[in-house]
Image (cartoon, rainbow, N blue to C red; front, side, top):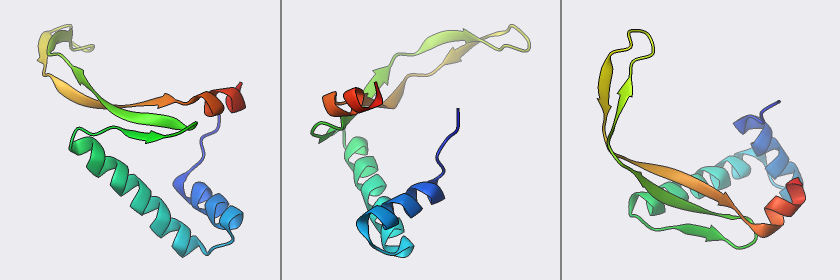
Length: 93
């Protein structure tokens, strides 16, 4: 599988919107910054028909170091999640 890089995404955004790469970069940075800020505050971000960004809480648990087999405690964490919306799921199918 090939992954799209940030630069490729910016180029596609600029081409599709008819704007410069600099403007597309600013728009992408503003979007990711707004999503990050909202998630930090515990708010969900919903883009209708595209998807929803949420925070999930993961409990502390015991794990193992794969090299040594030694038991170690993995602390509790807040994890960002993305759930695809109906139209995105249909488009990818």
